[in-house]
Picture 1: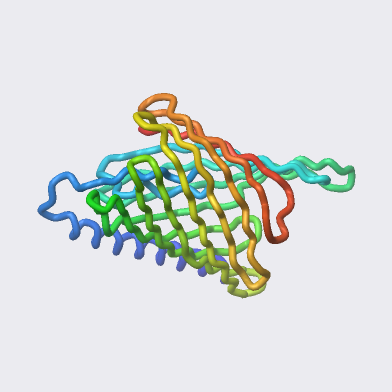
Picture 2 (picture 1 turned 30 degrees about the vertical axis):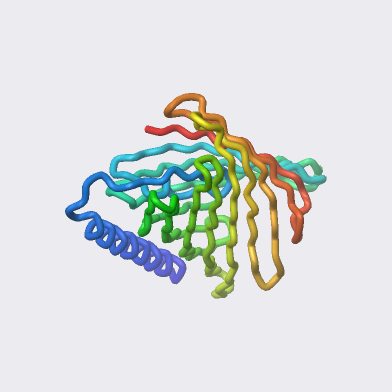
Amino acid sequence: MENNKLTSRCLRACLFICAITCSVAALAQENRSLPDKVHHAEPLYNDLVRDLGARKGEKEFNVGADIKRTHSVDEFGYLMEYEFAPIDRLGLEAETDFSYSKSRMANLASSNQLERLRLSSQYSFYVSKKHATTLAIGYTQIFDFVDGGTGFNPFFIAAKKWHNNWHALIYTGPEFTYRYASSKMDLMWQVNTSFHYTVPQTDHFIGVEVNQEVSSEGIETVLHPQVKLGLSNRLAIGMAVGLPISGHEKALSSFFRLIYQL
C-alpha cells in the first residue's frame, strides 16, 4: 500500500513538473516567429529527449537494442521511445525498457521482463545561431519494475557546434533512486560527454560518447564509439560499441538504434 501511495505521489510530482515546464515554455514563445535552431549531433547511446531547440510538431520514434555477452549469460536490452514537441523548444518523451537474459549455465534461469518506464521533458532555454550554442534543462521520472524503486533525474545540457561539422555536447545531472523494500535513497551522478563529426551535406556522423556514473562505489566509465547513417530524410540507423575502461563493468557490448522522423 505504501509503495502504491509513493508511486502515485511520484506520478503527480512528474505531471506537476511537466505542467510548470510547459507553462514556462509557452510564456517564453509568446509573440515569436519561428524560433532559431542550431543543428547539433545527438549522441546515440544516451540520446536526448528531443532535438535541442525543438520546434512545435516535431515527432520521432526510436527502437534500440543493447547486446552484451558474459561467461554466464547473454543479455539483450530493448527500448522503444516516442518523443514529440508540443510547443517550440519543449520536448516530451515516453520510453519503455525491456530485457531478455539467456542463460548459458544449467543452474541459472533465463528471464524476460519489462524493466523501466521513463517519462521525460526537456526545454531549450538558450539557442544562439551566432554562437552555435544551445543550453537546455530537463527532468526524467523513472519507474523501476525489477528492483522496485523510483528515480528522479533532473539534468542540464550544453551543446556547441564548431566550424559547421564538429560538435561537442555535455549531459549531466544527479539521479536519486528510492528503493521501496529498504526505504533507502541512493544518489548517482551522470556525466555524459560526446564529440562528433558530421559528413558535409549529409545526415551521417562519426563520433564517441564518454558515459560516466559517479557514486559512492566509485566511477563507472564506458566509451561508446559510434556511427550514424542517414538513410533518408526521415530514417536513420545508428551503431555503437561499449568499451568499459573503469569500474566494475568488464564486458564489451554493442548497441543499435533505428530512428524514424514522423
